[in-house]
Image: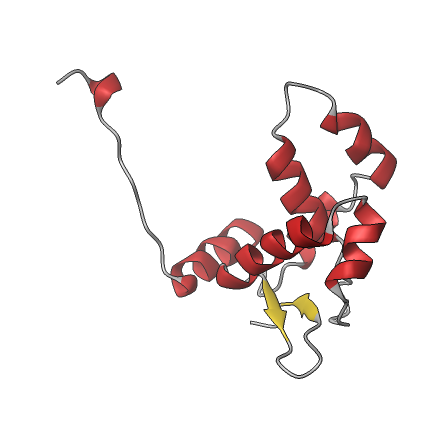
Length: 118
C-alpha cells in the first residue's frame, strides 16, 4: 500500500495531553500559550473568520480558551458566548472539549468554567 493511503491515529490520555502542553510551553501553566493567543484581538479574530486560509473551528476554540482570565477566575459560558459572538450551545461544546483535554475545569456547583490549575 502506498504511504499516502496509510492513516495513523494516535490517542493521548489527559495526562499525556498535559505533558505535551507543558513540553511545548516550557511552563506548568497555560500562561505562555494563552499569551500568544491573546495577541488575537476580537476584531482581528472576526476578520480572520472570513478568510478561507484559516480553520474557523480552530480559531473559535482558541478564542474560547483565550476568553478565560489567566488569574483563574471563573466565567459563565453565556458570557463567553456573548463576548465572542457565538451561540451558547456552540461555546458549550468547545468548553466541554477543552475540559476533556484538561485545559479548562468546570465547577460542579456554580457550573462556571475556568482555566485548569493542573
